[in-house]
Length: 203
Image 1 (spheres, rainbow, N blue to C red):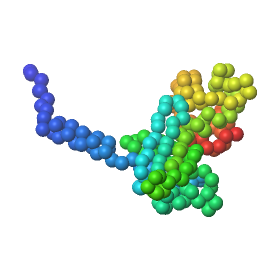
Image 2 (cartoon, rainbow, N blue to C red; image 1 turned 120 degrees about the vertical axis):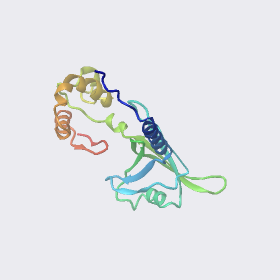
Image 3 (cartoon, rainbow, N blue to C red; image 1 turned 30 degrees about the horizontal axis):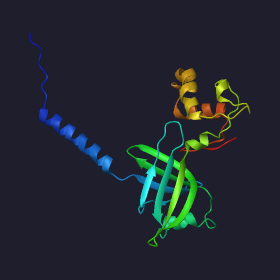
């Protein structure tokens, strides 16, 4: 007895491939979602009038983000009005194709070009910069090279989490849900506050 041969609907397969390619193209040409937040992570607005913007990704290091906006833009006026802002810190997030770049304001300039056009240039540093300054108490998972002679500052904590913690307790962590993992790391690393985007407060 001959086994039945499964037939393929080539038109349906071609239509599915075409639809996925079109969806991928739509995602790639869609503008990124750029948002400005205050120091308490309250949304202040969506950036829609930028002159130019760039966000730098660097593996295991701090990238730089820059954005230029006209001075008469409402977000520019809020950023430059330091005395009226409830918080001094400013955060930015840029979402593109499922990836997010987030950072905090490091430098602000008000610029007037030769044509008299006024605009602001904001320089942001990636949130990974905060991880470089988090104090880590000695614990069973911190290797000696990660702690300097001062005793407790661990640089490159992101690499540490990837190479050290997950290697030593990966099998254990796989059995925990997200909340349990969070509690586990807070217990060992001593951080008081874990933000939705990054660790915001040191010991």
